[in-house]
Length: 519
Image 1 (tube, one colour):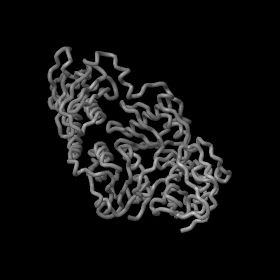
Image 2: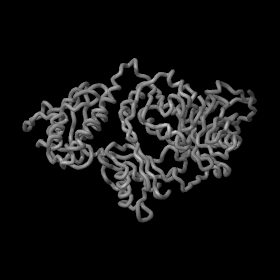
Image 3: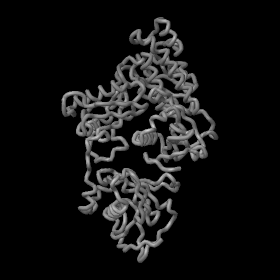
Image 4: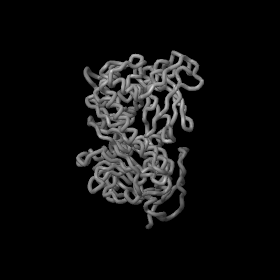
């Protein structure tokens, strides 16, 4: 295929992006089509292929990604809200990735490799990274890039990360409302947050106005129940970005993770415990989260909100835990023999401890004592209402531990693909817009565990309502398994298993970046 172009001298700007080699005369399209093709998401429905090609070619030239007069894109296919463009060379396809999130007709375009691409991943910037070079943008391009900020749900919604099972939707909404009022970020009396939905380790809040939504971004990193919440735009947001600060920059308050600075009583030896019987599947973060949660639910955390465990030093098959107070360290002795990942953990004083003797405690003893009403040596154990919650909590934690036992499968059984079941229902997939939201939200959450190549959620057939996560490496999938297996989602326990490449290919529908493609 011959494409006629007049190629000028490459005037690449010092943007850290490699240049396109220029030749004279006729251009020859080189390389397999799959290596020259690029996926474009968030395309406005009234966009023609000619307009999109012209805009992207102009953007490539004005940013210095291609020489003046050179057209990198030679073909374009536009569907309802996405498109595929074909570049002249594979190198052009790599360079156009640097335009990711460029504004076009009020939307930020999502530019990436198509799902069928299996070549090397090329490092790239985003449009916002390139913008600092102040490219020579034409007036026609500026008009197309003007933001359109509608007062619709997507512009009034925020993503909340780091939520835990202890957080309720009503409690979280009330906390964030109070925080906004405290720093005067509300624009009218009453509640700024009109809806809150928690989905396991993340959630979404909807606000009553675009202005208050922009203001609420400054709540990012606010401490709540011992965790710093991550607050940002959802992945489907395509509007303009605004400069924001963190909660700490706004108020001068300390991070929830800065609790060590708040410890005032006892030496570290008095606040340290030995933890034995740990396995290779147990890491610092999961141990601290699990044991801290057990202490809070059992009334062993007596020094206020937050995780009483402020440090964890993991060795080969044991670890040392550091607590924020001597009192809670003594209480934590009751964690001895608690079951985690199918193993009974051993908790005791370290050998270097020289303080007063402490009776050997036991997790089963704690549960039995609370059930029968026997007195236990717990400092400020809480109200009697806790007696009813402890047995249920113990069963729940045992189930979670059993669910996580699947991590102990042999190396030969592990793959880079996970299958999640019992997370969504077929009814959740009936609406196209809701389906796209689920795909985008799943991708945003699960990308935190490793390099996620694809999210596949079939809507029909025997795999309907199952979620397939295709990671770059097996290690990424193992890490995701640790985080997802046994998690509660909308009252359902998520079942996570490894699956084969063949099972993945047998799915009837595929989704990438929220866009449906025929398998």
